[in-house]
Length: 459
Ligand code: ASP
Ligand code: MG
Image (spheres, rainbow, N blue to C red):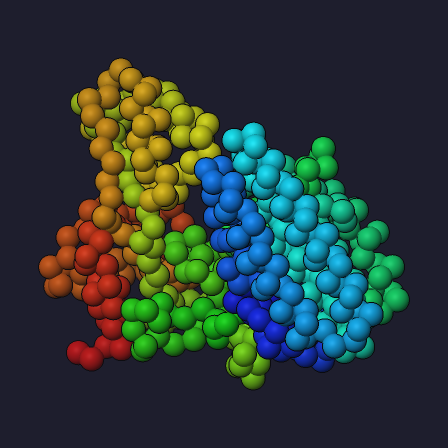
């Protein structure tokens, strides 16, 4: 068995729906299980529709019409068999009308709890699985659309940040999928969310379909998992920085996880977690260039001659800097800060402390809320809290990095030659990665020069 995950980048319109169906059809002997995310842009529309419903009821019709038009067009052009087309269209209309009623509920009550928001966000995936199952059935590949919350993808945690219960899923999921697979029916499962113990849908965070697919691969003990995208795989650096980057043929689980954590948009950072136990290999493939080998991610670790495999960056970060003469010395202070932020579901990406300051690295979108939250605490020993914006993080990743002497020196002397000032450094937390923070305007040239130094040394 193989799990194949297709995301929004592979599912934009009728043409791409046909393309992914063709890819799946060729793989039927391997018993594929499909995990699918919403059509490109749909989750963003749902986020916007929810926010707009809170302030302006008339936005609802417009947003529903937009989603309806997008999906109806794909059905009309990609599903030629009349009975399958009618059935698919009906299923999508049912979902649209449920969604519309939910949005009116939000508009009338003037509130949207995190729980309701999660429910609204699942509609993109729910519509998408009907599109793909419809198309597969049209080209004589029997397939069935399945909603994750109806097939026991059990999860817990805060709304918007769910964690799958792997043990329960291992027990329950095969009961739903095995009979289908034995009858030659391809399961087409919604990614991005599961259900709580109380049967309510809970999402895994934006981009969470990769994680869903890994959870399914683990539960079904598949031989491999594939993530199909619109790029070739992991590169030695982002194409926005330089076209000189090369494709990485192989990465260890840790390397891929750190690259994703530090900004490489290619994979959800939690994807490898469920795969590591059974050592299931993950392959990144290009939907529109199937002949490309892609990147394989697996349990073996290899150290390259250059050690560093990739230089990545994250522009969407910020720092909350907490000053006080003895903050580094106060037992329990860090706990209070962390609790205050986690109470409003702000995730801390990294912490660097000293005697006189504590630096909390967070997502930029959380900066204002986090700043207000910590300021309200009015903590003893804290003189000042400063929100630091306009910065960016650069990370270098590679097996062997922690054990290789002179490597950090080589990175930092390259940075120094450019005149880029380093605001903060963190190393040692991961065996395969370290990162540092620079001022935002210096980001691109700094990443490019490190990449040149290691991969394109022009002397
Ligand atoms: N559709 C969801 C999102 O856009 C989940 C995913 O794409 O993996 O975040
Ligand atoms: Mg998406």
